[in-house]
Length: 419
Image (cartoon, rainbow, N blue to C red; front, side, top):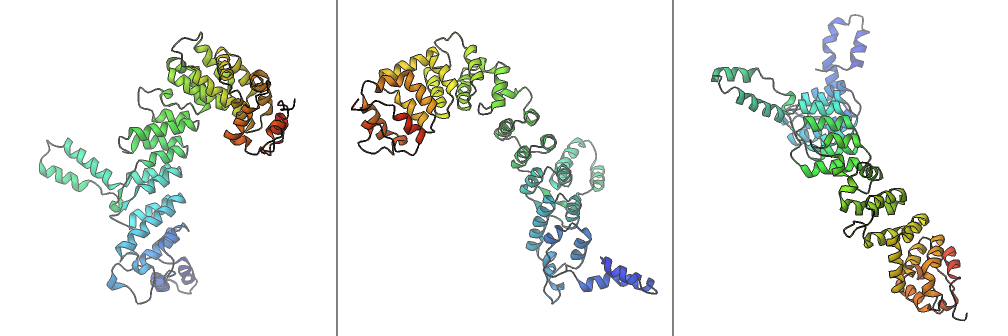
């Protein structure tokens, strides 16, 4: 029975404390813990002595409950509340990384199941010591090992096997720990290589190849090559899991010659690089596929997408290079043929990239407007949101009221009907 420190201290100051020391636990029990203090709340204080006091003050059956109400009356006598407090207390202790409290809970509660979200939480907290304890205390793991031991003892007689089974220690509390698929991913997201490595090597997380692949791709996206290499199956290459949306990975793709071997990857990487403005890497890909051939992955569609991305994001240097390239010149000719050069002007105007608007105008859009084809601008005004603010009848005068002053000033340069 637990004795409160304050009670024991008071009794020690008595003239003859010896005979009174044995009553300290009874006095502590009589005082009792606060009736509204739950075990899970007590776990947040980190005192196993407080937990001992609450536990010893809790009746073990409904018949032995005292007449005074207290939460502790149900801790050991009500199976539902018992299970609830075990789970809630575990969550509190794991968040605090309090292994001593977790060990206390496993030693006092018995025969319960630990859900996978507890392990997921421990992984997210990067608490390797708690994960190791949970695995060591997993009753189902002990059972699996026992079965393997029995298979190895098929030549032993029945009496020897029974004797061996009796000598095998039962896990503390006999709790079954469930390890879900999210445990590993939680460790990957917390970016802790030590925990990821331990889980990958020690915990039976099943044969979820897709989940493992997602974990590898996620770690690459975070720039953690170390974690990705831990999780990759033998014989796999890091670049097999690469995503062209990650700049570091794209540099690896080029450095290792992977883009050269995979045309589809080259196309996807080229488009992504255009969105990020990495002209230097785009030029490397072009060099890999030079001179261009009929089955080149750098098709007209890929080039058009890159041109539009440069207009949208304001990459003037990239746009110049793209439009002056042979594939770019083909695209310019196509735009002039169908009198649609204004599309590039519109894409740049959405975010007020006036320098690009001026460049496109000087290069090819002038072919659409300098001869008085105001109707082309009117089409833009009807079809594209950038010109939603244009007032009716003002197109011919070149007045733009879209709230975008630089773009409006630019369109003042368009030829007017009365010119």
